[in-house]
Length: 118
Image (cartoon, rainbow, N blue to C red):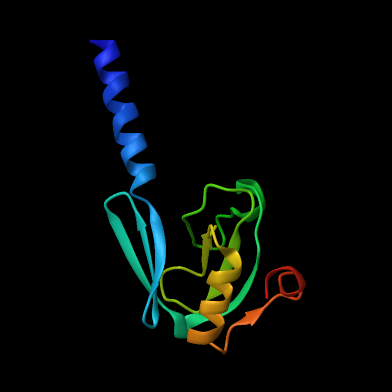
């Protein structure tokens, strides 16, 4: 019985991780984590910077939507009503930043990202 519970929990966790991701759709960033889905208007994104491991980007003072499971992630600072920071780790970072710059030219991209990505 215990093995069945552990196997079920493992299946749910793997399914949760595999069905998680984000994409740019028109003027929105759509973030999906398991069965949950959020849509963040690109007009609310103000700045993008490099993130880090969980403790480096976690805080109880700032509400964050963390959809990144990588230490090499990006933090999108927003004026969104629910999420002040959205943490993502695009597989094609350069492509993502290029698309973001095209769709949301108001976004300030940190200097540390520019020489290596665009």
